Image 1 (cartoon, rainbow, N blue to C red):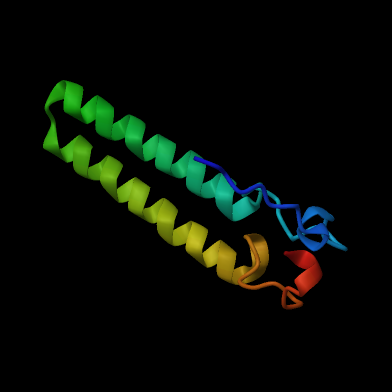
Image 2 (cartoon, rainbow, N blue to C red):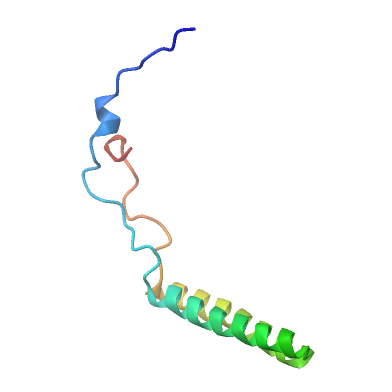
Length: 93
């Protein structure tokens, strides 16, 4: 059996002309979601250990509130941008 060896395409090996917009979620909306959801999960875990449904539901409500607050922050511009400002070109690929 023989395997075909392809030569690399120079256009795909060169880095893009400018880096894509990435901050790996290090935004205010991202951190708020992380900390509030973590707090909600912790309260749910405490409620599960105590077998207290009220505490579990309070933790779930806190986690859902974190989702809502994070979504509002993103809409206010404190999160990842909704779309890139410029469409990708062949050089970006």
